[in-house]
Length: 209
Image (cartoon, rainbow, N blue to C red):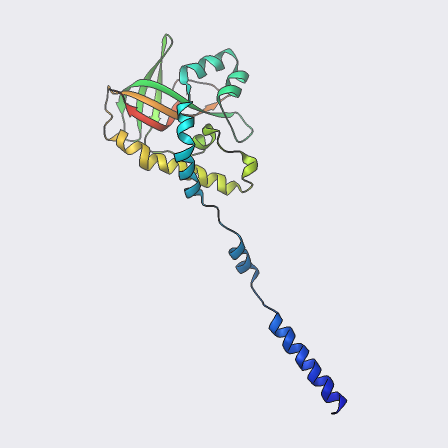
């Protein structure tokens, strides 16, 4: 056989084998197949069911937090509050009891006795947003979530649980004069502390009487 024909056949065989062994796939497809999206909703539901109850049980009394911070801001905030970011805002899980003085469309105003004074606070019943619930729980660390979108999605999912599961039964029964038991997340600006007018985001709330 002519050597040129032999070489031609050899090249053809090599080319055919090479073609059969190569698989071309879009990089975006490969990324989609290998990367598993973080399920913030499922994660948050599990967190809420399995870990949040214990956190609610161990919430600091609002009066204790106020007393501790009044005596020493640094020690009080260090002991009873959390924050995932550097800054003036601190987040705490607090518990308290008070009397509803007004029931509005998006909040319930509550008077809380603290020592010899009365705090006029607000319990949010409609606009549950932001990171207060997530950060006050102390259950998450920034280092464990390099993707900040995941952290934000966790906040949104936790807030939705409060809006859709925690608050509806309370909103249909609370009225002016109701004695209310509250466990809630609270945001405090350490640079401008003002206990009056605190807004509480409830994670557990009930009417005592």
